[in-house]
Image 1 (cartoon, one colour):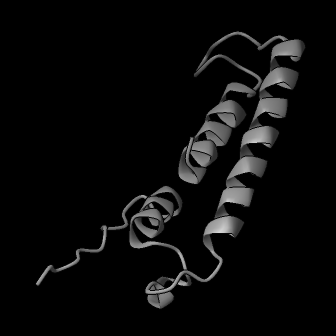
Image 2 (image 1 turned 120 degrees about the horizontal axis):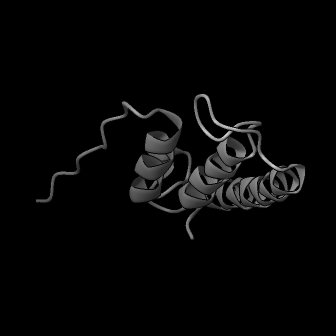
Length: 91
């Protein structure tokens, strides 16, 4: 999984840990909530590690803080859903 995929998975588990099954749904079992919260924490930590690792300087990618362009677009799309990916012109 990529960092952005871990971030999305953490969000999915947080949503699943809610106290009801959708609008008007019944309560979620406490053990299921604990499971989803633990999984969300793991995926969030892995996303944070990936973000840190990809933020280290990479030659040729100084404009995006060291993150390769394709990873930068993935992260921006996760964090800002209305983000438009950057386009690169090839000579």
